[in-house]
Length: 447
Image (cartoon, rainbow, N blue to C red; front, side, top):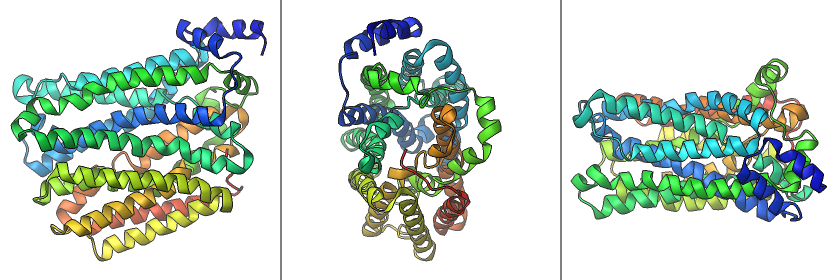
């Protein structure tokens, strides 16, 4: 790329992005360096995500819904949690327009600052006893802001990573991009566990819970710089010129590729359903129906997330040997077996600490194997023009259909009919994934 090309590409960029582009013009970025930027960006997003998720169980029912009995208050809190998943596709549509008009640097800067601000602002919200229903309205607005920002935070770096990786290691590098989820959960769970175990309940509910939310803005500022530096690289510009990572209009995308979008959203359903059934839901059950400390259980989940990270990496190595499609079939089958086992003999019916630990660790292992390769599984079937935006939209729809309402639905059913409902919900997701894979006619490739 010549200096003239670089200067021409700066016309729609922010000063920050232009500086990063000039600094990166002569710098050849290796896949390993791209991987670091991807992991930092994803970990920041998932930290915000899990901070709200954990608080939805251990904080919000008492701080924002004190007028309801515990189970009902948690259901209200999970309904608030779902708002972001509804807003996320809308965010993708809005920020795709910003991307096309003003450049990816502008889009990412706005999206990540909105995400960080929305999360941080929650830490300053007054309790329900102080301002009444206004606290709920403000919480809902900020949660929608998180969802819009998460839709806009899609940067295509995961696709860039796969395209720049050696052909025989694309499964591995695709999996590396997914490490942000377990890392974000580990940081969020450790922070909450620390305050819960070292503060009285009154102090924790008064001010301790606010610190993890307050940390979000700093973490997202770091993520902005890490991601803009890569967005400004020569490789990224070259791929844009080739049309591989070009933001496209939504209407033509849906009109011409609606079937691929639908199948792409259904393939990760088993993984995304399991995602919340081993992270958010178990905390709610432990808190509501057992005497076990939620802070201690969060540390058990943190160890499970560490196992999940290892399983994510293993999924990449396995996919490079047997192919992504085969790995998705195997992992969906294993999730179905896990779901049937949960129906027949749910391990957390009573206060069985060993059973709870087994359930969490086994679930996190399966989550890592499936989640490592599930995102964007049919993106390669899209026309090059639509691949970038199509990957974002399928991910949004998969989260909405598979995970957005999972904690709400499963807690509602389990509180009334027993924990076997967890297995039934998960089994439905596994069956949907298997059906979607069978409907995908062409082979699922690594990019």
